[in-house]
Length: 124
Image 1 (cartoon, one colour):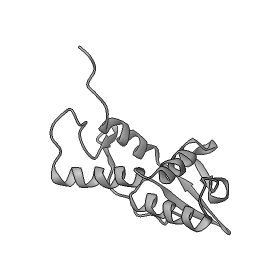
Image 2: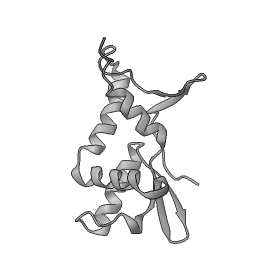
Image 3: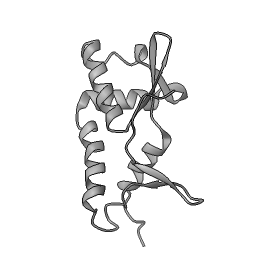
Image 4: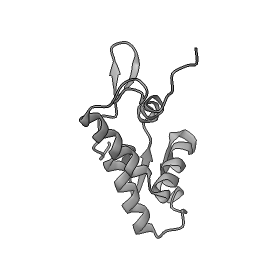
């Protein structure tokens, strides 16, 4: 069970898998709502500790990591928990409690949406 509230960073398009919340930056100017959603995501990743935690979860075998496996980022455990909470609030992570441990996961759709947002058009 997930305890996370995720932002609508991406939604499946009809028959096309993941569609980003926002168009690629080079496609058209963002609307105010699109910019607000993207800004929350980038703000959460703008902290070096949060970026390291996000990377640790994303690169962990199986695509999920126990908090016990990702706490070595140079800050105390309460601070790790605070940063993980901020990443969850931004919709970048989901979590599931299993016994006494919490497991974090980066949804593939979130990574795909981030990639599409920053994609440049193909050279002609």
